[in-house]
Amino acid sequence: MRLPISIFVSVSLFTAETTAALYLSSTYRSAGDRIWQGLTLLFTLVPSVVVQLALTFIHRDLSRDRPLILLLHILQLGPIVRCLEAFCIYGSVGHIEEPYVSITRKKQIPHRGLSEEVERQVGQAEGKLFTHRAAFARTSVIQAFLGSAPQLTLQLYICVLQQGMSIGRGTLMVISLLSIVYGALRCNILAIKIKYDDYEVDVQPLAYMCIFLWRSFEIATRVVVLVLFSSVLQLWVLPVVLLNFLVFSLYPWILFWLSHSPFPENIEKTLSRVGTTIVLCLLTFLYAGINMFCWSAVQVKLSDPDLINKSQNWYRMAVYYMLRFVENASLLLLWYIFKTDFYNSICAPLLVLQLLVAYAIGIFFMLVFYQFCHPCRRLFSSSMTQGLWDCSSLLCCMCDTAPSPIRTAGKAPQLPSPHCKEPPSDRASDTYDDKPNDTTYDILNDTIYDTPNDKANATDTGVNCDTGHSEPSIV
Picture (cartoon, rainbow, N blue to C red):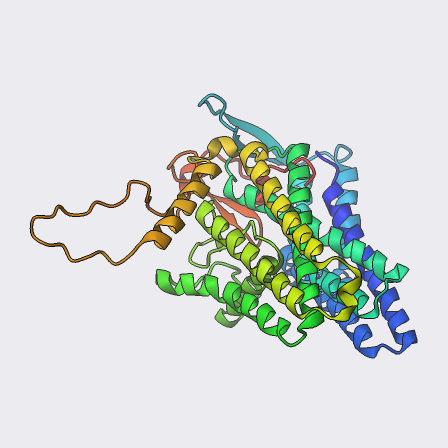
């Protein structure tokens, strides 16, 4: 059993960022900057409350009669207590005899077309520890994009306005950037675990490094672009942000409405239809917050029982990055046109070029990850290069398409260009085979339920079936 390092990292970033934000808000109060103090506290306390609610919801504390744990969550100490509990569980492994175990079956990544199924025993302690890992994986994403991302943007904007950076503000900015990148990294790993749940996935250190560099360049560039644009056109930044949030918040609902699927009722048995709607709205809001700063590896699909789109759509990813690159370039162009005298001391064209190149470097590391470092790249039915080529061919066909002239007698019908390809389907394009999965994945509770065909082979245990998942090397 692996040491729960990921839990420790999540709690450390959460605690460090909260402490730095509280200290910085006290300095704003001493300086008389009430507005900056209020916004700093807002981007600290609101995501902290959401994290406490998420941990309580995932662990089902309301139905387990744990008043002390609930009190600690109200005091915003829930993550620290959960971390200590996880390390206590890890320390008890091997000292206490397991009364029963469960049997899990995972496929190995196919090598030369061959794939074997491996069985292993999972104890009750390992099942509880996996539940903690899954809970902190989700809270890391929440903290990153509902708290750290707006906090970093705010503090960088204050630095530009005040033309200086204090030690406290710089410390908070560094911690916030690390928190965002780590949350995006956990989102990528979570997407891999959900999509390839039937396989024993092992993420190598080189893959983590590629994801870290990809997300660092992408997020840092995006934040700097938004801050530069808002520093010269303060009122126009609100339409840009609201438009991004509305598009990505409504997009899953529009797809759900077009699919004519029934309303999801399997999120939580104790939730009413109103409660389910609130949870879905919060999920789409978080999805919009992620896409505001970077590409969300986990794609929301409300018509799916697991609420997650398990297909890897290269076309959608390519369109996102092309549109985001155009948007960043447009915002930088507007900043260059309307820049004030404050920016005369810097070389504005060089800064614009550096930001665009940095964003392109982030895309380069993304391509390296999917092409060479993705742990399940052997399961792709089509390579990412082919998917991006199909997308570019489609765009070329759309640009070159003109109204066809009326055909006269004696003329042969005009054939379509051989270079024009059909757009990629929104279905799974990288699955190893078309066989249905033998498990059902619950995205909110991270639980596997055996189908009737497998119930006869599963060992009856009292352990939460969360233990049926494989864990990445640091998760």
